[in-house]
Image 1 (cartoon, rainbow, N blue to C red):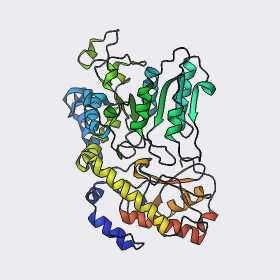
Image 2: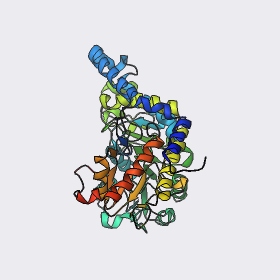
Image 3: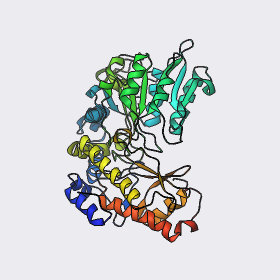
Image 4: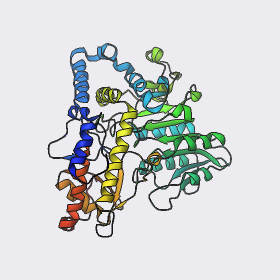
Length: 428
């Protein structure tokens, strides 16, 4: 079917969509076009039910739910980790659901950043999410280093993307650790994790990835690629709720390493209640757990994983690419990428270099984002000029994408954006 600007083309794509049946399992509000799944995924009926079931376990079982709930709360993190293993190409014991994104980053960097002699630098990029940079700076200071000297932020040539060649060039003999995003949060550039991991492995440098913007929308093969560690959140494409419990991966070649921030929840499970003062870590990634799992925060992930397992991560990725292809093709074909309308696309076009969202740039981005929300289209904004649109394969339709593009055109045609405040909202 050749691409058409007509809405009937979008409707035809929706009729042929093998994942279209999942939309009815999510709470999609009538009259809205939700394009912010890369910030917070929508609630599904499955996640709601798993949370309600957990509340019922608390109500009826009390403390006995730690062992008698299904699954037992005591093994929540390990059981959910097993279910996520296929998403990341890992063995079941290489993943545990625990903590939150930045907490897990701190725990893993504290373990894997071991500067010795001249080898003390950490490689990141200048387009990283701020929280990651804060954490890396803190660990450099903890080792009596100077973040201005020891944190190497690989520069971007255009403010959108970072060259993988430049990242590899930065892996010099004085580098002790590499920590990178899988997907750049502004532009949506997907880094070549396999290539970068291979380069770090060849140089004897541990490498880890923040996969907040790829978890649940892009399949990975961490163990095959030689990734040392990774971390992610579960509230974006995995739809587990605001501030949901995070996840982490540790390659099994590091099993037995002492976590730098040990806590009692990372103790070997069968002896955890021996209450000994000598730490004995769990045999797998579970050793990097710190505190008791937040059961109510983790519970929705059970239902979310039911849907992801049923849909399949490869099918999710295929539709994600199809949705974002369609969005960019519509923008091109509708003449919005022009001086007349002022839009630009800051996301790579190539499938191998693109995550799950599209970065649409405009000098009046804050006002256009406000205008979209007033029309029922839910985007988000990232400074200086990026309107991020994330059509989520499990509940976004091609007709939603078509309608969004019409609103982008109309907002400029009517000039309505000009009457709106230029300042971003507190939560943008």
